[in-house]
Image 1 (tube, helix red, strand yellow):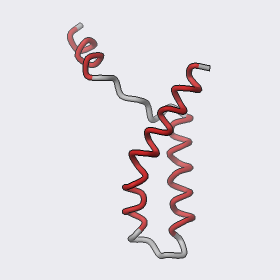
Image 2 (cartoon, one colour):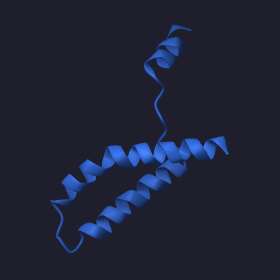
Image 3 (cartoon, one colour):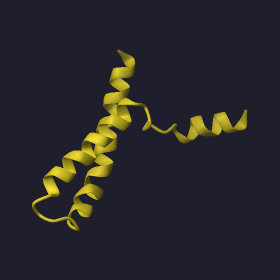
Image 4 (cartoon, helix red, strand yellow):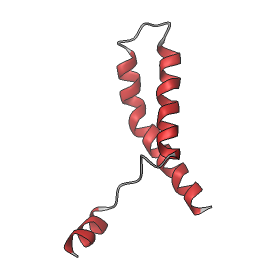
Length: 69
């Protein structure tokens, strides 16, 4: 259950970070294809989170702690 919550948090974070870039990039796409392309990009982000190719990065303190070992 904990991994489900983490994946949900990662998904929400990834989509919130990527959404403005997706919208900006869609301007370069034909108006008839924008919605389909946006859905495809979002689907790929969801799959990447599900397959654990996108994870929450460690905090600076955790990174430093790991690096100092």
